[in-house]
Length: 200
Ligand SMILES: [Fe+2]
Ligand SMILES: [Fe+2]
Image (cartoon, helix red, strand yellow):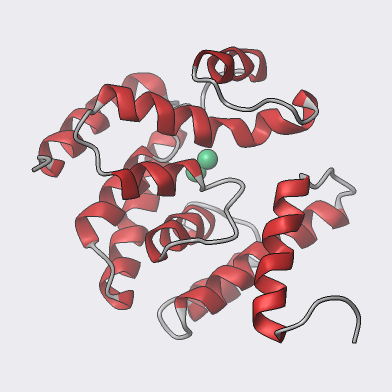
């Protein structure tokens, strides 16, 4: 069985070198919130704490470095690379961590890989890491206070959909590119909620 406490201690030490001081604090804060959310929603606490800590493992690489790492890890780069780079640290980080810690549970690796772009079939752990990354208290965006008050008070998937909606709204308001995969995720959850597709 994986010694998750050891991975946490070792990972935290390594993150001190990999991340800026602020990003390290963000990672620890995400880990703390993920742990609290896991307790409230009945998800494996150790997995959530560890995935939260490690989620930004590759965050400090430049776009060019991430593109190179993606090639090394055989990550699909068929989309326009200019629009892909901001999402890539999640996937390259997950691949790098799987190599670094051979015992790291697949559920943790998946949650880390999905923390930027999400997926159409998010597990509870995936959703917790996505949300914790967004609402952890060191983030200052004005819309987050509302989401924080909802955490623990509404079903996990409902909270995830609200967070995902806010992310997409933010991109639209700033006239930023939305990755087709992100639209696919949104449509999957919208269809599930309304039980149909299209207008009406
Ligand atoms: Fe990230
Ligand atoms: Fe993050």
